[in-house]
Image (cartoon, rainbow, N blue to C red; front, side, top):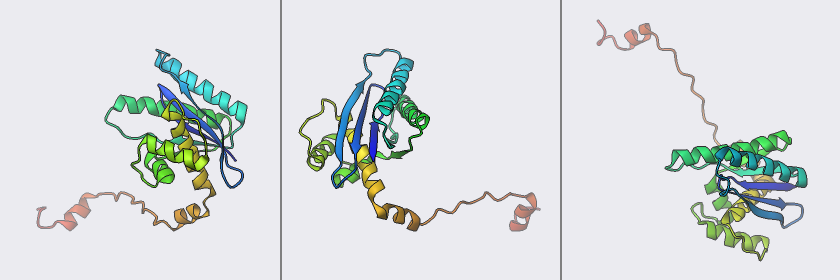
Length: 192
């Protein structure tokens, strides 16, 4: 399986391609899409779509793994990040590529064993797990690799499906219709 990992961003978007056939995954590509020099936000979004589509056309990945948006203090940044993520997902859907979103804490937990690890810790551990010497100029590239690696671990773990099946199901409560008669019956001392 070839997994395309994306760390979405509107200034720098990290991407990686991880081939997961065999005992140890192999890095096919890892880089960033540098968008800071594009002043118009709409043009950045278009560039994300076009570049992601080109990656999909060139490499034909089997799966897209993308980092889920995190909730920060700056709402505008969150909205922009969500747009970048949505455009990448739309490109995958247009190419009939299934996708999954992974929470940042799960990604860090999968790679380092610590859901609060730093970007540097994630990059260092990936370097030792996947045996690559290059030190990417931007940590967004190794973040994208971490997303792809997390997808590999989740997809290749037979216990992941079992855990999901055994996890307690959340009960869905339907809101009860409140009737005036019910209120009166339940509160005879209040209503006269």
